[in-house]
Image (tube, rainbow, N blue to C red; front, side, top):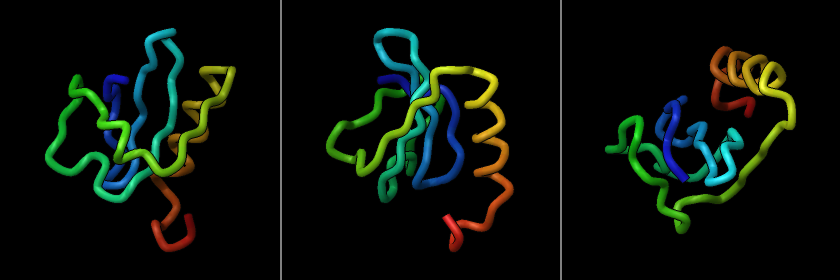
Length: 71
């Protein structure tokens, strides 16, 4: 999977081989990474995908605006 957008050090949106956007969580999963880098599968603790791209956009915006302590 390739990093498409970094949300914070612990969350990224990645693109799978099948062109599906996936929200990935893991401690430090994005630390020292940049858009276009590959995700290390060992770093993935949780993954979510939404079938509708509009829903993924809304979910991402909501995630960015919610304090990390509440996630």
